[in-house]
Image (cartoon, rainbow, N blue to C red):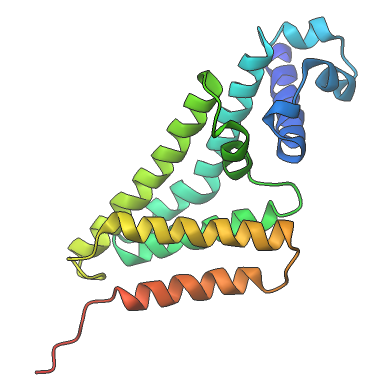
Length: 200
């Protein structure tokens, strides 16, 4: 990487840490310049605007999420093994983010009633992840790992609900055992949607 690319990468890494703790709206060029010991114009040289910086942070976060959760899961067998990996690695990532916060979740709170490119980018990323979960769920049904007559979107909805509850209880309420509850909830859900055994 060239010097300019290295500097931009360092700025983005610092910006991601700041956004995880203070939210995307708390991310400012001035604060970032201070943290990087740079001038505001120096930061602006790499990002044309605060909005461009925020979107770049979102893209970096999404890239890291894919590297840690999505791509490793794609190496698993299709069906329930892949779906189980996606949820397990997702829980693992959220667990690491308890001290700082998940940008997907905090961003949804920040931008639920806003409009513009940042919200559009965030919605697109969350929809992409939910779409991946949905495809894995449908494959699990096709492989008869899950009941075929169950709405796959309902399964994705319940998985997402478990993650939101985990983030809320672990980060906001500081409850111990939240990870185990999320994992137990997932296993119970999978069992409830497992194909019925024939009595014959």
